Length: 120
Image (cartoon, rainbow, N blue to C red; front, side, top):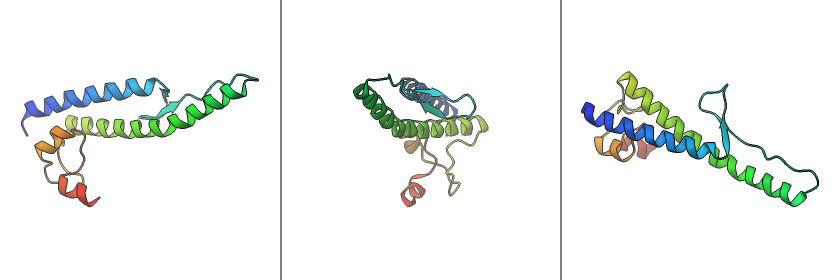
């Protein structure tokens, strides 16, 4: 794959990472002790107002799976950026064949070629 294409994909990955971190920061904070981990903010439940407390707890429980999904996306992006830095970007983690450029253009964080991805 051409270096120009890799640079384009790297820029796209960095943009995706920035958007995901911005979205996460709306309801979670980055864990300073665990790389790649974010923690949804637990609601401050005011005393005596049960309806507001229930609403805040429901919002928190809704945020947890969203946080998890966004964290997984960030991990894939970080892994792709690491592979770019190491010069191993675009190599299928399962069969070690080159991932097609078309696949990487569609999904720059792809870890598997189309054939191996269909088997997972």
